[in-house]
Image 1 (cartoon, rainbow, N blue to C red):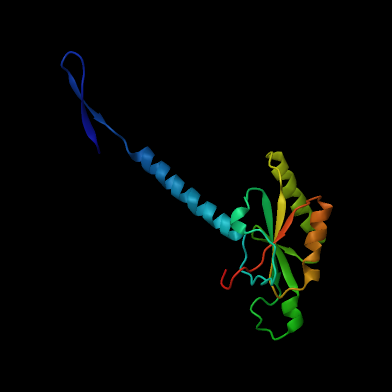
Image 2 (spheres, rainbow, N blue to C red):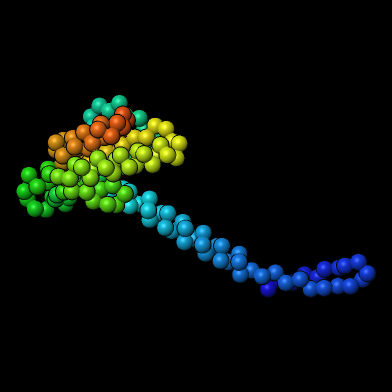
Length: 169
């Protein structure tokens, strides 16, 4: 423990102890917070093989300020391509939003989640809410179209579709 001497008027001296326990507690609380925040952020992005566009006019991801968006991941029914069934690879198994899978056939739940996210963003006073769609490059467009329809019904005018810019990105 750190000790220091305090000199008072009249020539009296005293020893002051500093209790470090609260500072250590705060440090551990911060460590736990950052670990949990990192895990929550990583749950939002599923591992997918993104498409490789030939002639893209997309804005670089670094230039987009990401504050009020919802990311919808479209996961292939055969993500490894090991089944040998090309129809299974092209079909979507689920939409994943913040780590929670939503069945492809359940368009009502998809709409409800997008609407809830939009309303929560508006309640916080944020403007420019948008949907980011991350689809496996092997999945057919008709598996992505329900997301576009649900976003249109929720009156979300802005949507981004993620794609692979360079190999390994």
